[in-house]
Length: 456
Image 1 (tube, rainbow, N blue to C red):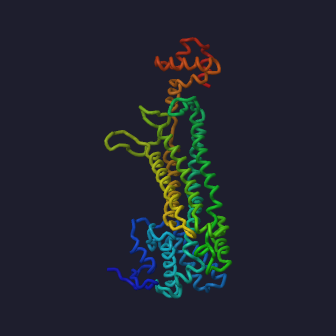
Image 2: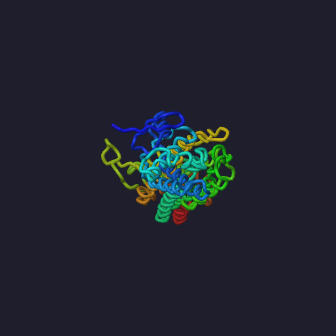
């Protein structure tokens, strides 16, 4: 049977597990708001820990914290950053909309661990108090939105952008490898004019490249941090130099040019930067969906589909049809894209939850924004490594489909005119012959001219 200790907060006595580093406020949140099993993202928790470490150091420099407390808080925060106390963060996504429960969760864990370092006893509020010392110069209302921005921008830079570069390089390599593979283009799901498979893949590579550029364009807004605004943006109870110094510390620690928000009232009342970032992630998701969908269609078959490319075989595709192999990676990517698009809708609705001086749907924004970044990064790597890299061109199928296409008559228009070319196409369609066969039979052009026009 678990042992408990009694802790007091402003609402009375709470029984907390004896081995817990969290305290009364976290316990209340866990007991009273047990909605679903989604926990706050670890990247978000670590971003909060970074803020706490910065605050401890800066408050010491400003003479607001003694060195002993400051060093203990910073050391405990570093342990959280390392993931040592991940099991102590039990607060769910569906909590108070400011994220106060999560902020107090980390305040209590850090205070408890700091106290253990200083006295040998975990928990409690002395000598390190979760509010007076760990949360000094901060409010949930500025720390939580700052943590969202820090976690999102770090994740985009460290995970998503490298993953997209990997995919872009894989697609570019195929564009080069397939540069001489002629195939039929398609518009409206109908035959269009010839092109090369390399040109088609170059379009996909450019989509991903543009996604990387779009992600770079949102960095300036995500780099603005609300830290220092405290309760409503006025900075009450924070030292005038705290915000600039703490954010400079975070910038040095992360290597990212984080800076103080130009307007703290916007930075706390609105979550527009998160909504913008989510929209950009949705655009990237749509690009990946386009690529994944095209690839699975181009590889459809193997005998009765388009079959212009061969996809890597990863696993049996049917529990009833022996020998069937499915395009599992493209289909997984399509599902990721659907999830990211749904998350964007959720974040859009959350963005509208900014009433007066505070948005009160921040935990859900954090969950969906960071989930989308992670999913897209994983999807891009899987698509690159387990699909695109292993694609082979079916040159015979590409050549055969071009030869059968009625759209070849487009190249004849400058020589025989639009109407005559249309008659050739209709004749070929009605008789089941190829355009080449009709042209040769009707002797509309010399054979060498026909060959040149149909292969250009």
